Image (cartoon, rainbow, N blue to C red; front, side, top):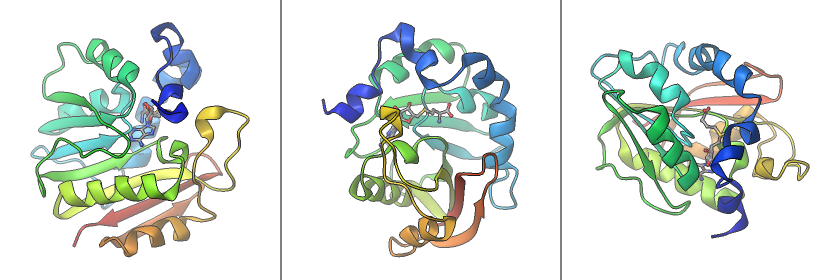
Length: 205
Ligand SMILES: C[S@@+](CC[C@H](N)C(=O)[O-])C[C@H]1O[C@@H](n2cnc3c(N)ncnc32)[C@H](O)[C@@H]1O
């Protein structure tokens, strides 16, 4: 296991503390969901299959599942996926899957309506791994399906190991990285949520 994957596999007791203050984390669920799904391109529909890349324990998945047909998540952390089984116990129509950073997602091509990724891409070390995520998202999306993602502006820092990643100077640069991979750009946003957050919403034609 490389250091990056190791970082996201802490002892279960350190799991939530390691992410962020757990009380704020829970209180912010509806705020974060609003940032992701309250756009003209990402409104949830009752017949939607929705996928989160970097789902963690399934915090956002659990919040949105009453509004969709199924809410799925993939994550590279075995600890997070194990904890998701506790957090999501008894919740219908949710499923989480452990994936390798370079692995395929357990979905058939063209079967997902909407994919989102929140507080994840800024941690991914290197454009190659990011491009792998974008290509897998493209593969599993239905034609006309949408990917909404958030990452950080600026330079990666090693002051907090989990933040080491490949960041973008602007939302336009983030969106541009998808264009060569088949996506079209629906919109880009900067500073929504936090000033350093970048957002891009992409469509599979
Ligand atoms: C800060 S947590 C956010 C979890 C969730 N998105 C939320 O908002 O509650 C970041 C998550 O991204 C996951 N992650 C990091 N790199 C990943 C990758 N390449 N593919 C999938 N998940 C990844 C980590 O294991 C961790 O669970």
